[in-house]
Length: 211
Image (cartoon, rainbow, N blue to C red):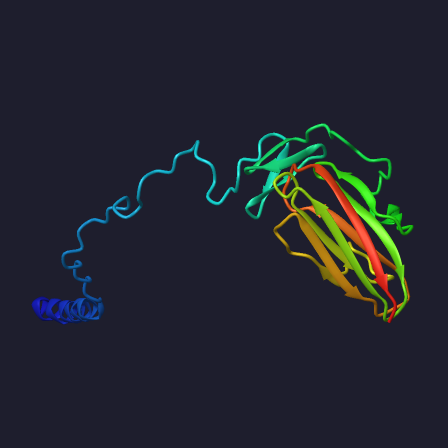
């Protein structure tokens, strides 16, 4: 009788163990040919800690900062060959200076102007025109020493924010600008060198023709 009771107890235990084994999920198989990953295989060479950053721009030197492929030079310096160098002393600054700012422009009085442009300098002249009047501005100089350009603004325009109404793009010893006024008032003319560090003499003649 004791053997019968023992068999009655062991049978449910065996069934429980069998069910537990059937419910347990099988171990996942090992990946086939997983191998090892070499993290340095495609990393390329180590960067040089002392190398300049990519696209750093020109080496402007201690007196300027690179910006969009050129130099922003500090006051008293001008860019030459991608580097900021001191502006040479001006050899012949004229008595109409200072007129670097358009607010200090010299009013034309009807006679040709004999002037000298210093490195990094700009000159400004105003001429009063009536609507329909035609202005001819002619600058003569030695192109090998000084490459000048002229630009003109209408009355009331601000060169800091407004584009020029007319400008020259010549490449000889003379720049000529011809402009027909659309409004009455003072028209601003800016004379500047197209190359940094240039200086030299020039003659500016202005003539007007009534409509």
